[in-house]
Image (cartoon, rainbow, N blue to C red; front, side, top):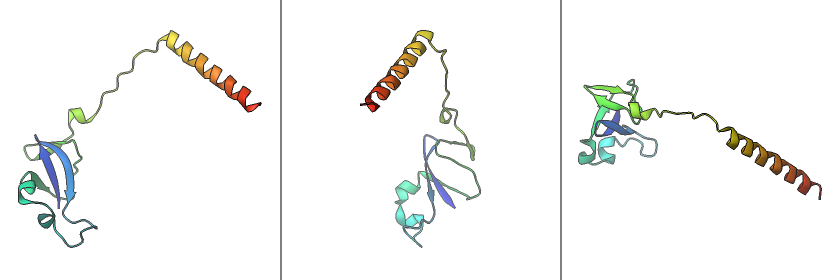
Length: 99
């Protein structure tokens, strides 16, 4: 058994019933009743990650949990400047290594 701490139906933390650092001490003795009231018990074989939403007894990957990466087209002028900086840096390194 594991416990999922929820805020606004979103999993914030997944807590195992037992942990190595506190052998044989169940979660009910490690956390307050008030805290555990904000958690739900989940079977070990249920797949759940921090950030998942909990609705109607099921866990679902949150849309906001997966970031969207937007690639902008490269500015040719900036690319040229970056290449020049790299080339100058390489030349400087070569010159300093020769001293």
